[in-house]
Length: 225
Image (cartoon, rainbow, N blue to C red; front, side, top):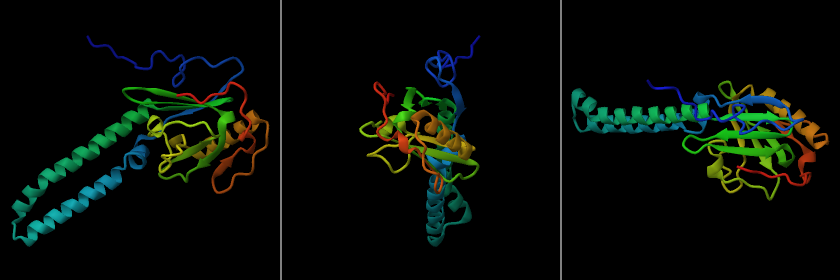
């Protein structure tokens, strides 16, 4: 008889590799919406549009060559099958990544646990966060990109898909495609203010800032994956 197996059964708290230290409190946990992740990280809409254009071009070419409707249908069937298989695989990957990813906000840090074959846990102290930018929510899900103080840096491939698109040379960790991202961003702003001891600027255009985080790294603080 086959038994259910939990790859993360070793976690004392889902998403955390160990119990929180005394005095540190769990404030919020969440995971990406897989449909939104499929659109933004796996680009299923763009892939579907690409195959749609190719399929139309193939049908038009066959028609101009004098092919019958049955011949056009037969010639395009294999391409339609490849398109459906490709989109299905991308959606499955998005679902699995969303299921394996947990974002955690505590009074002292943000933890990102993600990965399929090789799970990675990123531990980001709040004192190393310079800014947090809230992307405009679409389809009920939004994303929060985090800028870390230099010279701290995490490799883009280690972060992906929890990385801000377009920032490959200077990667930014991202809480991606989460529900009620605006409320999470507000909670993060308040927590940053309390942790750093400095009052941040008022958010502008969906950007949460924490001025006190710059140059306010306590001894021993590290950015670890």
